[in-house]
Image 1 (cartoon, helix red, strand yellow):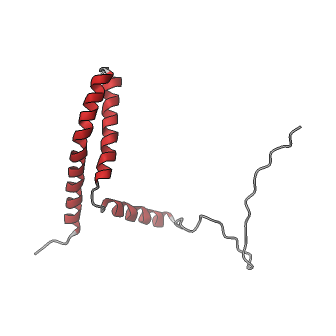
Image 2 (spheres, rainbow, N blue to C red):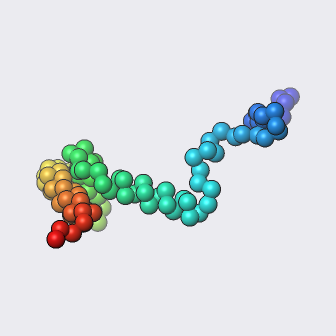
Image 3 (tube, rainbow, N blue to C red):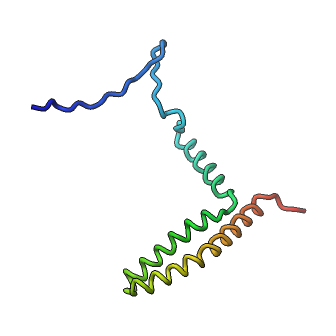
Length: 117
């Protein structure tokens, strides 16, 4: 008969003073307000990045995939024509998405600068 499976126990290594340090808890914010501040700062850093072609390409893949799904599943179009149209839309979405990202980036940069007198 097989032995009952026991749960693996984690080792808690303490200091000589008796305090126990756990891995992975150092980066966690102490309070909810501190967590909000970290989230707001990381969002601002992410939005202040200049646009990239890779980001535009990823967004175009997602948009063309949704477009293809809508054509096939909801509008009941044939697969061949839907794939061709989705491919065309993919090629249109790439430069369109990059230019839109660039426009929004420049707008955010202008708003961050103090008003000129």
